[in-house]
Amino acid sequence: MGIEVWARRALAQARGDPVPDDRGPPRADADGGWSALQQQVQQCVRCELHATRTRTVFGCGNAHAQWMFVGEAPGAEEDRQGLPFVGRAGKLLTAMISALGMRREDVYIANVLKCRPPNNRDPMGQEVRQCEEYLHRQVSFVRPGIIVALGRFAAQSLLKTTRPIGKLRAEVYRYSDTDIPLVVTYHPAYLLRNPLDKRKVWDDLCLAKKVLSASR
Ligand code: URA
Image (tube, rainbow, N blue to C red; front, top):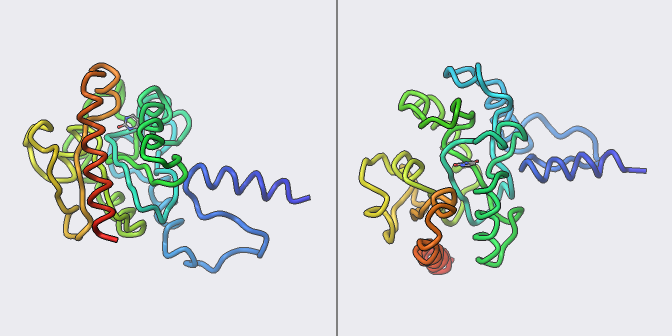
């Protein structure tokens, strides 16, 4: 009755996988290497985080999205489910996305690190260096119209800087060697502790929206 296909499709959509259909197996590289990348991340043992993770967290959403949100690293709930931003901070991120008039499925959500640092400790430089190629390949594939870096860690990693987040906000950057615009805002977990800064985050999201509209 197609129920199995439907269930696989729903799960694939949630994880941002290529959506299965009934037309038989796709050609080996029909999705431009996206599933190969997913598989590579799933099997990654480049750093010690592989030993303590439950699941890798590749990313989720629309793999051809205009908006890409990048956080730091999976937390406990993300490690359990294999999906990014599904805990309390994730609920707030979903609210931010919906304030922009979109659903989570409309955007792409990823992290700098694909594995959870034990006890939510800060990621180490060497872990970031081993992992950053994956995010770079995700960005090259999605080719979003705008990247929003969530929080100090993501902002500093993506921009290769040590400037404090307060000084990185309210400006437009380019991601790595691409022409993809990038703006910085506070992490939703920070906002849960500092709700008065929601106004600043809204300003940052409006800046991102303006940059995206201007580039269309
Ligand atoms: N914090 C992050 O930076 N990423 C997640 O996926 C969850 C919490």
